[in-house]
Length: 422
Image 1 (cartoon, one colour):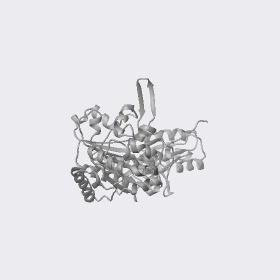
Image 2: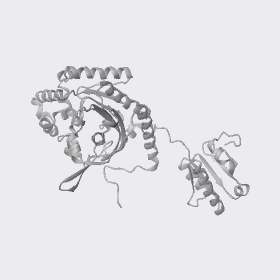
Image 3: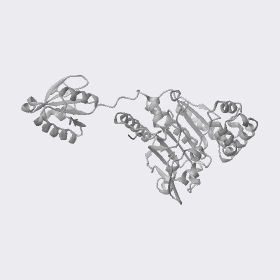
Image 4: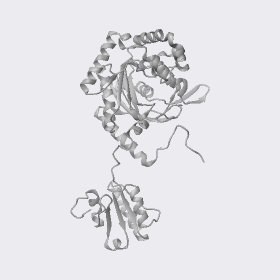
């Protein structure tokens, strides 16, 4: 018997209702903030991610799924959504047709991770990219957007941490500062961080190894150690705008992102319910990425939220899916024919409807209706056929009453109609 590949999972119909609710709530919030939907392929040229994420990033070094088509072409399953969105922005000349663009997306991403709670090899992101502006007020709006999404999902207790990595020159200065400060502590670092010291020293700040964390905290790092006056002022405006927007946040000079394209503002959202993998989402500004991928210099900022991690935090707190199904139970062959007729009647009037195709007993069919979270049960038996009516049962109140066929649609559409006590 075949089983699902380790690090992936099936999303079954009952759970998918919650996924749909998350997507619907996301759509509402994104449109409230002026974002439009984009969808890019799940496969891209491997070189896109080498160029955007950085040759020394852990995603590129350890986590990409590569499909080798031939000796000249390698395709990657996308590990994140930003690079593909920027590629689409450049290739489709969105800058010329739309100028400043606010884009959002949902969909699967792939990384060759070591599977654990909140970390899968196939996972799903809700993300957004605002492309075409260098304004620090946009950074604050993007963080406010994340906060609004989480609150719309019913999540509280999350923490937002922010930092500024500064411009390219500031990042070079920060790299030098870290190398100088860590030079005498190399032996205390884990093997991975000893490797990172020469290849990508910023990644040491993101290590979760307890010994490395202790070494990092002893650095006494602040943004004053590396930010130029312009970037320091930019960071100050982001914080002021967040205060105006009512967003609670903490400044964290040790916060970095694992991808090379980030500059200036970076942020991460965490929740205690997730354990060691505590990030719900993250993002930041990447002013150089569009140019690095062959486009014009363009300011941009974005983020992504992990759906699987959202579900862990949300638990059972999402509103139960609204009941809207009418379930038809027929008793006998003649009743079944009438039931098929009513199925088509209800569906043609926009009323979700289903029926029993397993010839269940009335009791078993009622259990099935309950399992399907039906709003109404419509029973058709010999007596109902003679009287050209149905027995309509309200599954919430338990009340039931006979309703004429001609009144069925209006009664289901408006249960308070005076023709029924349903």
